[in-house]
Amino acid sequence: MSEEGEEGNEKRKRAKRDLERTQTRTRAERRETAKKQWRISPIDEYESEKLDHLGDDDRKSRMRPIQDFEEYLLTQIAPETEHDILGVRDAVENDVDDWKDRSLIPRQELSLGSVEEYLQFLKSFYTVLNEEDAFAGNPVRTPLSDFRTEYEDELGDPDRPYIPLTRLKTFMNWLDTPFARALWLLAFKLASRKGESINLDLRCLNIAHPIFDQIIAKHDVNLDPRVRDRPDTILIYGHFNGGTEIPNDSTPGWEGDGEVREAGNKRKRDTGSVLPIDSELKTALIEWLLVRSPTLDRDLHPLFAIGSSSVRRPKTQTVADRLWRVDSYVDSIRRFQREESLENCPTCDTPVTAQNLENVEETGRRYRCRNCSAVHWRSIFWGPQQSAENYDEFDTTYSTEQKMLYHQGRHTFSSAHSVKNSDLYDGVIPKAVRTEGIRGDDNDQGDTEDKVYIGDQYRDFEVDVREPYLYGVEGADGIYKFGLYHDPIPAVGEGWDV
Image 1 (cartoon, rainbow, N blue to C red):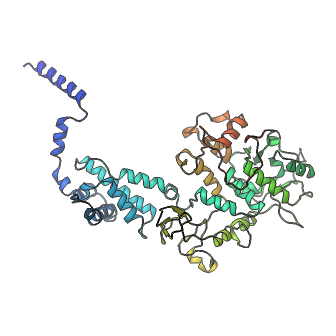
Image 2 (image 1 turned 120 degrees about the vertical axis):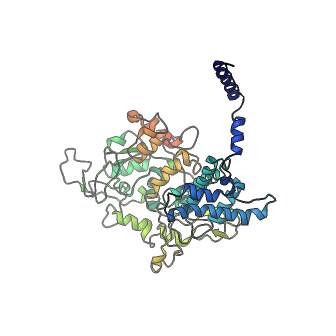
Image 3 (image 1 turned 90 degrees about the vertical axis):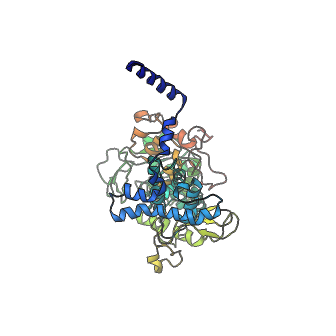
């Protein structure tokens, strides 16, 4: 056969083979003759061939999870199965899950980050075995993904406590004063910072309700033009630093003699943000206005006015003391923790087991019920072990403290409403509405989930902000509810128009 004929015949064979199968017989035969040593002693080969460039400490840290898994496989899994398990090449996905749940997570010396690292190193090991034709598939991929999903908030930022919405509902329904309810709802409903809430004035509100109308008329307040024609909205001032003098609402040609603000506003938008008010926040604000001390002797009328003989705007320290630091206040988080305990499962009344670790640095710890496996999170606050003398009434077993600060509202608002965390809460508010429309952040449109909300398209407040805020997208709920009121006052956009 001529050279041209042989070449043509080879092309026909190759074309036919490529059409008939995804894996050729030749490749299958070659896999059978792969490096036998990788199959006989994969762990030794991995250490000598792939980790030889690492220092001793790094090499040991990468080998430790692999050796640990093999030991668990041989001593715990093998005796319980009828199959002959001789090493890591006999492992399946269920074995990794079992090792993770029964061996790694319960260990007190391993943080959640360390558990993730163990799984990642084992996954890399099996990836190499695939490359060396010593194994097919990767039994760690799904267990690692599931672990990261389950512990996403704790793994993402160990300094930020993850507090589930169910725990926040318990706390919010425990609150006893209109002052605390209104302040906390501003944090969780509108992601307002503490300084932004303290700096609110009556002129920043437009609440469609006769009580609000009476208070505004009594104090001779002119509403800010940005909310004047938008009922059930609130204005968060734009950026200014602490010590800035803010003009009052009765001097259009203002050149001085305003109010110097102790707290600054960190909002990125210099022009401020007009935000919608839902029925729950509206009810709380009306409830607060009914007991708020009058400020008839002031030019500017702070929303959160405190005091009796000397009515004033609260300082940041005052708000921190009332909401968290000093347990003599009825709504202090310290008092809440002191009144709360979790020894038995609320679901089935069986003793719970601490799934968290005593000597790790991460916050957001939790319990798992021994009987029904329900997960229950720890209190939103506990005192640090090193300050036990100052926290006698608190749980001081742990080396770190957990604090739910006012800023938690911004974190909860973002995480609960993002698409990737929709398992935390059924509602999904579009990213651009969350970031630019509500939180007041700089909105980088490069990774925006909803391309409709771009740049200057925030022109129709009702359509572009209020509607997605209240109702979410694609049939999902909008802003979450805490269930504080049996019969909340309806807000514009929630079935009641003015």
